[in-house]
Image 1 (cartoon, rainbow, N blue to C red):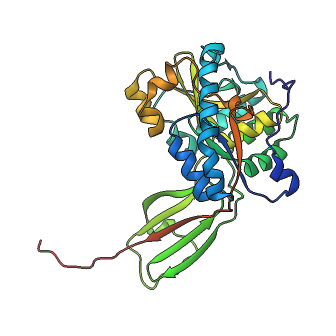
Image 2 (image 1 turned 180 degrees about the horizontal axis):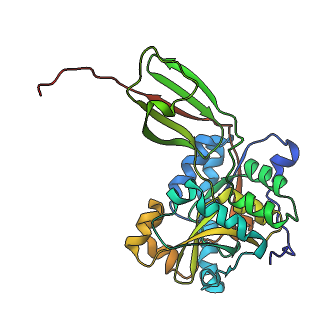
Image 3 (image 1 turned 90 degrees about the vertical axis):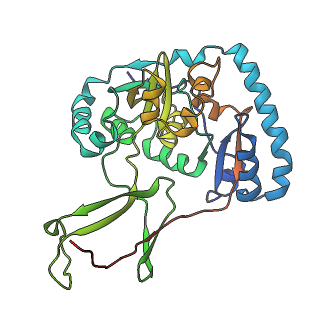
Length: 319
């Protein structure tokens, strides 16, 4: 069963208390590379060069604390807990498994849908948007029922983030959205009968679709041995933990070797799998809530822009 944490954690920092619209990025310090944090603070932080001067000392202090955790919490990642879903979620899990988004995204390795303990999930992503986490926390509340919790962690509906689309050239289109999950998806060849509500200038032979949208955004993890690495859904996981929840429904893929890991994991993981699956104390989700490791960085508001260009060649070839 889902349990409420006795020490509910809150992500809001001073900027959030003074101005609810302030943008802040929550960073997990002390994890290499230092250059990533330094560049972020210098180029995206509101305090710019002034904050960058303190970045090295902050990062080094957190790195020293991680060395202490390697002694005091050695093996903590091996305590990852996987439980069966609540019986009331069985129908929702079956619906998810039958959905095309699930089948296309999770067809490489053995996969289960389970309740996982949040605190002992390993993490490779070093920062999240505090504002987005806060908005998600407000949506889930303190005591969601099983259906609401499942839908929050493993949503099948359409994303609500607004998207602005403009034609910026004869063969160029720009898509703008503030969501960090906004991306180019794929290209696909469609049959003429699949195009609805369009009146072309002549009979169609085929349609090439260049698709821009959002990733599945399911809460998912990779299991190797006793450890679980959070692979997707960082903002949702932080929001759940901040709301005082300790367990969440999650898609778990099991990788039995480095070769299998490369099928589903990001390059940050596959470049150094030993760090996550063999080190004494890798970074954990709960570290985002530890004031000795985390840092709230005021940042400029940013919008993701995806520009789609296409070219057409028309020529004759000998048969």
